[in-house]
Length: 368
Image 1 (cartoon, one colour):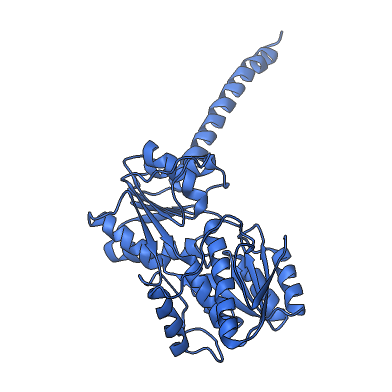
Image 2 (tube, rainbow, N blue to C red):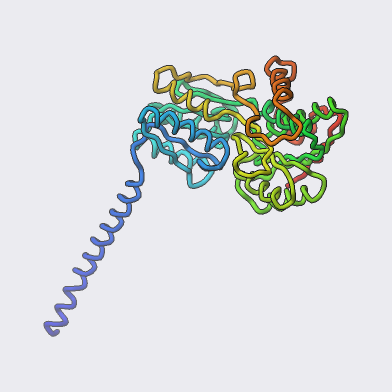
């Protein structure tokens, strides 16, 4: 064997070894870069189906965190799980705990089981759960630990106000497009139907409501097509109740001279077609709870229900685009709810309006 042949044989293992070292270095560098995206944050928002700019309660919760954090200089961040399963969400709790998080803010029912698990597994951290209650996967056990504060809202009251206002403003053909049939969305829908019927009885008119759940909280062409078909028929205004699906309904409304009712936050800035929004003040509720945590008065182990009486739900009358329904009429019906003279039905067992007692309103339930 020549000298050149022996040299080539010697080079092979050296080349392989170098390749292994270089590959390891690259992988190590990639892992380091992936982790370097994380920053230390005292407050972490874990999003559910939506995003922090979804015009819904994810965004409202984020704004509440941001408002307090920027007042005080406390660090904050948000994590969006890769998927909606429990394992993907639990990874975010682990990630936050590893990065020194003190408080997790968790909006939505998708976070119920993960918070139930995390409150014990990562018990050095505290949790604010919005629109849900911590329970196990089988939903046979509910437990709110001392490091968890639960905030819920009377969505049926906000929905009632929206339905009542729409009919009093002259609309008789209404629609309700909910996201997924989870408790808050069902309560919004039931309240909307009852409010519309209450106004219809007062006015001596008949109202028709098309009612469905789109099974998504995302902007979806199928939702736009559905809304367009409703507007082409006799539907005049649609309550878009489910995060980014309002974008789909708004596009349909803009193309078919329809009107829209937004949800959770004031969506009047999204389009001239938005006549009002059924709001719950998630931003203030989160702000107050975050503040209480850092001031040492955190209401752990409890559930707080935000209602009209506690200014937790409302319609944004200053930005609403009603033609007939005025502030005095709004104040009157709002006070009746506060005083307990109007108590909307809020059970969520069936989700199709079949258990509601309606007099002047016909509901057509549609499977999406």
